[in-house]
Length: 370
Image (cartoon, rainbow, N blue to C red):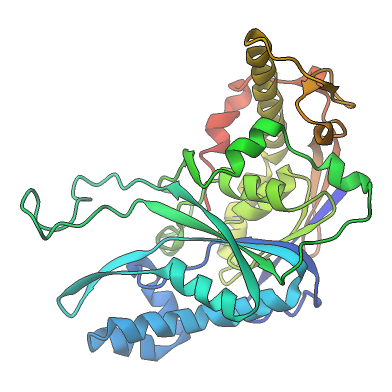
């Protein structure tokens, strides 16, 4: 199997290289309005935003920033198939403007926009991105009533394009082959991901501007979402590509991807990640299999039996839907005119590696950032 991963340098307000209904899934994390690290970007898009902040009008600046994002959301609606899913990772912002401290609810504004476009909001997911600063508790210290709760979680907003889910012909093999384990379903589709953490991204070879623009977005986040909301052969779009973590996750998950990024320098950061993606993919899939085998062992020790056996692997599974499950690893990556071509082969259980092999495994999966 081969997947294609295109990267275009340009503004995502025009996804001209993608035809209507050209992608099946969107996974992205946009610049967060009212977070100071993104101010210069928003100022470059609309000078009235800087003027509003200078005049102490935080509400107007917030509105104008979201108007800029809305142009990309309009393109997302055009290129996403009916029934396709859009997953938006975003955090709210706390900021003091004109001596008034408040929270700016980015998640609510984006939800409102997608609802207006005809998307159906689905249950969202929270994951924690802890602040390490000793001063993270805001307000008046130990004295009531003017302290504020910490803001250490991010939202994974999930929207369906239209009222109906995607339809597949009865018995479509690719959908069954794309299945995940029963115990993964129970963890991934919970509304709070307590095992996912964000930290500062290390761009040691990048210049100051790139480091200032980077933001924590663990590989585990897009990897889960891609497995949850797409099948083999689908194309995943990230209109705010950054250092390409969504494309990296799509490679590991054996899906196609398309990314748009304003700064070409970020593609150089991605090239370094691609060099190790085959090893990372094998470590990631191996760990999923090991985790399942540990689940099987514990379930048997608890006196519970399995009714089904996996068709492609030597272990039992909990449900009939898991029987045809097929995992893939990466054989090779080649650069193309517009990005990368990746070749995949079915995962061989006998080639499973330890989590620490080559410095990869769970620690590596959780330490790759957008």
